[in-house]
Length: 186
Image 1 (cartoon, rainbow, N blue to C red):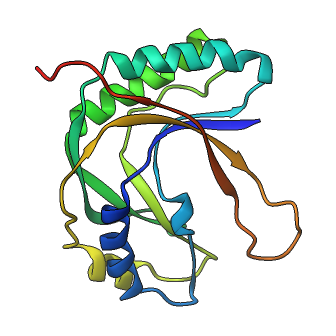
Image 2: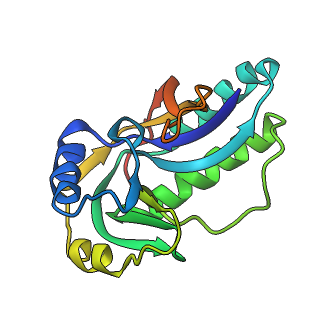
């Protein structure tokens, strides 16, 4: 099964982002489905089912050692000419630490992780088919600021890749398990 650890924004934050995106949404980009909006912390790829109990135990520990923290959607950015995203502001150091803990939990559970990279908090909004200039979208969303919310849990999500063969079919995401962030704030 294809898994990743993530922070899932609450409905109120999603509603604000939805409103901002609706103002710029058009058919030139392939927009991600709201049901899939999340901040990936650690992408694990294909994980054998037998690893799941140990992975769950270790992710629960990571959540237990992390205090809830504030976050909000903040502006936008891009990866080359292929992806448009919104960023995060607020408890970025705490988010980065939670990402480190999720990555370490997966490694210790026996999940072969990709080479470690510095964490960049982003939520993918759209992908380009190539040749579509992202500048108009970047300009339109540059000053977007969401209302702060509290990150209160770490989620393990299964990515179900499309199998229909229908163009435009998207992955479906399923939260397998979620753990509350429980450490006392410093």
